[in-house]
Length: 101
Length: 196
Image (spheres, each protein chain N blue to C red):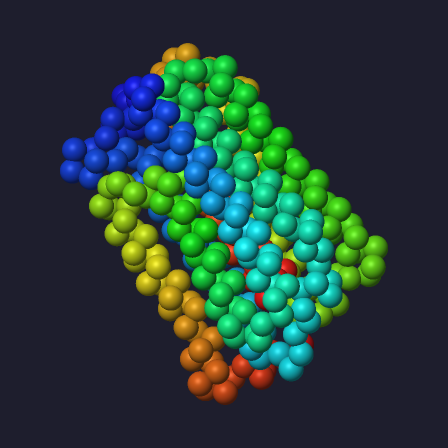
């Protein structure tokens, strides 16, 4: 890696770092707004997804990563979607009340 | 006989063994934590009452932990970047900083857990605490694992750099990828458990 390339990379890492810190402040601030449950969850998860995407894209170098890795992750995302849909299916089958605390 | 594509990349995929292996491993970890997140959704939607995170949990401490982990993610990538530029001194400094930040996270977690046990809040107390301790406990185990690997590469494992610098750089890259994943899990755990 040439010195100029490295400087450019480091600049990118620092910009992402500052953005992540700012989004952490935003995340905590949202919780103090006392929104109703579903919008609060949606907004909180949206901010978390943006933060996660920044870490994945820039720190984990997923931008410009080889195709095979991207395909592995697409498959993983589909399976995770299935995992997260399971509670939805259980709700549709009226089964969630079996787990009341 | 040398294992092929340990350092050199395969011409068809453009990857070496370690790169593909770590991403496959991270994919399995996504399923592991994904299963717990899914369980959380099920437990919460099925519960008659669900406490607010602030009732049991310390948000300022967890915010500090978030900052510590995000900072350690930056220092680990700066460590790799320094090593790629053959600056061993800077690599060592950034790697040590990463280790210190990870230890800071664990110290804060210790105080969090200790405070809960002092108040007689255990995993068996209620469902919220059960899923909280399970998810953060599993995350702590992952932090400990990452810490162990970093300490290994910085001290006894450093001799590989002298024998084969490219191979060592690859190992540091994979260590960094694992560490970013650990940070990523916390980025989701923090709002889900503490704030929502």
